[in-house]
Length: 267
Image (tube, rainbow, N blue to C red; front, side):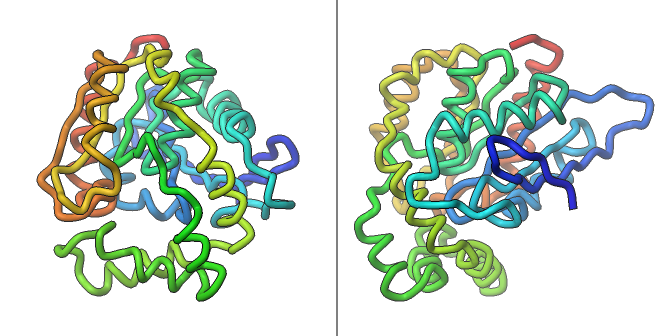
């Protein structure tokens, strides 16, 4: 299995490239969210990989990447360094970066701190004020991560997801190690990307939802408009706040059209 070592972390990655063999495609980097891993992007890949070289990777502690050593393992600097090295060594030095949920927080910071690595930025259901660790972590400690995933899944996926799909997402997210959850919640509860969001200068697409089940507030959307006036904001009429999971085909097509408008430009 392919791994890349970054700062003592072995990160699992997958590359999907179904572009014409004579082409030199640009790269798309996909960054998953909390308790997810590379399969979370499965439905996006067929759309993206026909035109771009698509790289997915498991963030440290998730999926098939190496475990976290302790509760203080995560930092914004490390997450950014991991993504930047993947882009530098596997993606030709610059990529169209797409982040889902809290993975989008890493993508935002990557675009802000390493602008040379990010050609465009797509954010799918990315809350600027992530949940605090209290209730979620208490449930995980008492009943396990899979129980937490099942308990919190209905508002995430909405009412149109079939039962088999619901179980697939429960199993995917529920397989996360509790040690990873502890470290991640410690990190995510102490970041504030809204304060420096205006420093992101690349083209930005924000995919959100009109659902009353949304995990983040209308103020987040307002903050995107205020801090990133260049951003394109698309709200899908979706019953469920994880728009990249509930409507992956439409999201991927919207993202493709957005990236195509900026392909070939330098960060």
